[in-house]
Image (cartoon, rainbow, N blue to C red; front, side, top):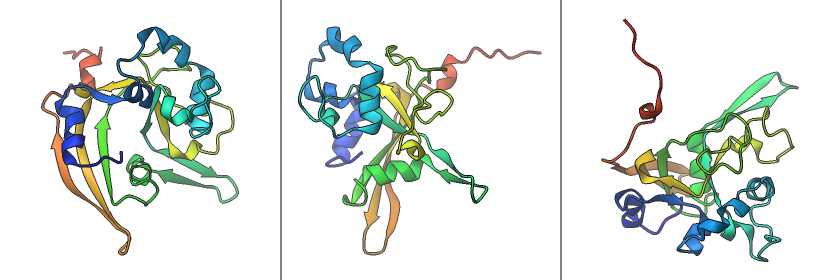
Length: 199
């Protein structure tokens, strides 16, 4: 994320709120009765493939109204002609977006977990959509290699383990981690596991 400073970045965790979608950032309090009408396949397609297009419902750029939160998880691109797979890591993609494609000198990365729906479940707020999964989302997307998971409305603070600041030096073409803030209230995803130890 491109944020103004460390205090704002730390606040996402320390205020115990988390990462809110842009719609909630713009309209607070969030109109809870409108959530169902926002979590649609059409809006997910706008978020993934037409982020800066005009929202037909509001006339505003969709990026200002999106109920989704883009998370990077990495992906693999297949070049069938070369018989080769290319790995696009989550960190690389997140830094590319966090620096606004190299225009910003600092990016903040949040390390978090979400529950992934086993199939398309756009209307279910509590699960994220693995929009890079070609078995579920088969429609062509020019952005498939970005390895995106789309969370909905909010990633709670207790699902964020830490935040890191990365500094991009455009002249040297280097990027390095310069600061970390850990979350003392982080709840590990294993808390949801139903695997039981056996003798």
